[in-house]
Amino acid sequence: LQESVATGVPGLSAAITSARGHWTFVAGVSSLESRQPITPSHLFGVGSITKVFTAVVIFQLIEEGKLQLSDTVSKLLDSDIYHDIDNAPEATVELLLSHETGIDNWEDDPTWLKAGRGSKLDPTHKWTKVEPLDYIRRPRLTAPDRGNYYYANTNYELLGFMIEKITQNTAEAEIRRRILEPLGMDHTFLEGFEEQNQGTMTNRYHFATEKYRKLIDCSSSNLSVEWTAGGIVSTPSDLVKFATAVRDGKLLNEESLATMKMWRPTSNEASDMGHGLFRMRDSQAQGWLGHFGGVLGFTGALWWKEGG
Image (cartoon, rainbow, N blue to C red; front, side, top):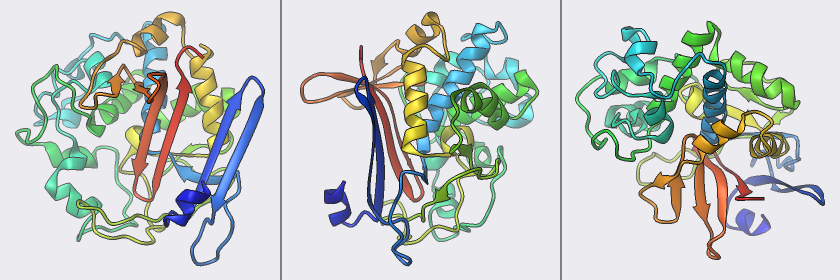
């Protein structure tokens, strides 16, 4: 961790759990201005690790007989949500989970990049749940044909709308009721749609890249645009509780877990995609299950050993 801080990363936090115990590690500061040290209770955006939470709720609904993997967007959702989005009406729950719908990713849309990361960015803007989809109501520009892997936040926002339609409740309330409260994840919430409960938020810093304009301190921003695709804020220790519960079958039955682990290739030779989970292979060919996450101001990772 200290090596990362030495390269310019303001602060990091990590947690590891094994049969021998639980450890937390921190380095750096939560604010470049105040120089307040990072603590284990500091909150970070987890980015696309959120997708695992969304997938778990979807599989719970399948276990309850309220949903099937073969159900389509057009069967489950009102057309005002998905209209004019190429490949959306016929997209099944299964293909949404595995990013094989052929639906464009709004986050790759040139117009959205200006509004969400570039010259037209308003960090204080709170996005509505449907607003990001408005950027891809057009013929697709980047997604391949249905059945081919193409990672898109759009898929998991459509799954969020399915959760809401089936439960007649907000997706964030269902995530809280089904996952956060039973596991005692008191430092976790879906930003933009829930209030922060405990802990202290770290400042957000975003390095310049080819795509995004340079944002040194973007702490006035929020993750509302990411919603069920990437809007959760948490701590490493809370995420460990979640990962352990998924791994040990505390949230899903064996059939659901087996379906989550039905692997297919991605664009990265070292990784496979399941239904809500990735499998990465390290240099020793050991498999690791979980998800990476990256959003404005934060980068994260959640992994557990395959078979462990």
